[in-house]
Image (tube, rainbow, N blue to C red; front, side, top):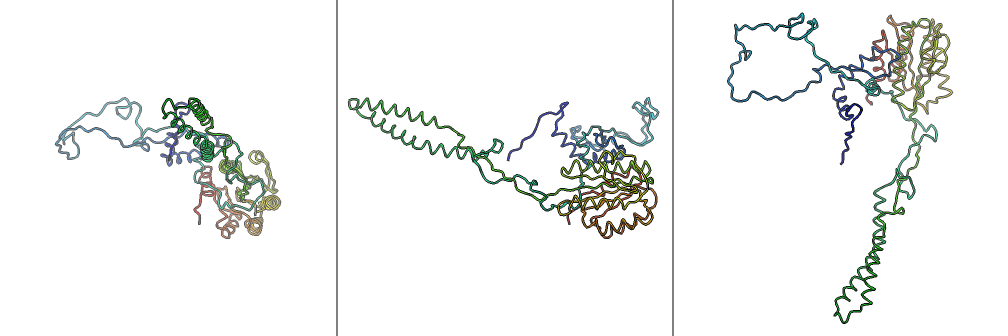
Amino acid sequence: MSYFIDRRENAKHKSAVNRQRFLQRYRKHIKRAVEDSVNRRSITDMKRGEKISIPDRDISEPVFRHGRGGDNTIVSPGNKEFNEGDRFNRPSGKGGGDGSGEGSASNQGEGVDEFAFSLTREEFLEFVFDGLELPNLERKQLLDIEEVKPVRSGISRDGIPARMNVVRSMREAYARRIAMRAPIRRALKEAEEALAEEEGKEPALRNKLRLEELRAEIDQLKRRLEAVPYIDTFDLRYNNMTNQPVPSNKAVMFCVMDVSGSMTQAHKDIAKRFFLLLYLFLERNYEKIELVFIRHHTAAKEVDEEEFFYSRETGGTIVSSALNLLDEVIETRYPPGQWNLYVAQASDGDNWDDDSTTCRQILSDKIMHRLQYYAYVEITPHAHQALWDEYERVAADFPDRFAMQQIVEAGDIYSVFRELFRRREAA
């Protein structure tokens, strides 16, 4: 087995191999720092990289040092330098703590220097979404004939250089050389034997004309041997690839956000941050997933990404309008037999009178049987209202497909997001 190690230097003479080894070794410390950073970020700077600091004590390593050497006899009742009653002067310093260093004393106890370095955008997002996945993702029936993958299907004489089968090509070339050179070698051997026989005769009995003919024939046969090409276009063989239909694992995520008047600006900012985190997660990890954005107050509307995150429209609250629109979109555009369906909903829990019961009925009777997963986030520091109670009944009926969490403040967003979309062990 051969190993290829890329020793090329990155910008500023940094080795990519060493950097990846460092990130892997101190993964726990970096991940903890990344989590703290996510909780501090605003909506607009979620995509940028981050400067991370790790306490020096966490990256220190044991080292070997030379001892004093020689034979030593020491009696150490607690130390090896001072005896009881010895007196020594306090070190003088410039700071307020009377220490030897510069600066003032700290009231935080002992401290350590920190090792600081910068994470790129890709490295930052990798740590943010480490260990997360869409739950219950299944491979569905064939969505269409275009969902294919190339598979090996034998060897072909025609193809592109990128698919050349070197082993088969060299085998064909070797066989061709054997076949083409074998009769020439036999003729060459016979001519050389005849020449040796003729030269073995007495000088007076040698046929000079015959000798010249044999030498000319031998030269010609040798040139023919050398003219046989080492490899010819006839020898080239290529890996034949055919497109094989595969089951589709396409998925769609419905993002449902309450923008009613009861949702304060702080609540909406938290909801937007949650959905932006979800959007980055899906954009990075799932290339073929589709996103459907639904905003609602008393009426629900499907919107694009720009309007979902930045529109200021508001009104009353009827959550069932969003669920009815969700059911309609699934019915018309996303057959459950061909799509993995996911829903993420954010609300403050406030709803119009008896509409919460209607929401539970829509979920239980129409929607949940089609979905892979439903994640509900309630943004409120107060006691839960009727919508939460009704959703708890849905969660009891669909424990593996319905999850709900509460967000009190912005610092809870990342931990709630990880809990909703953490990687679950297969049953």
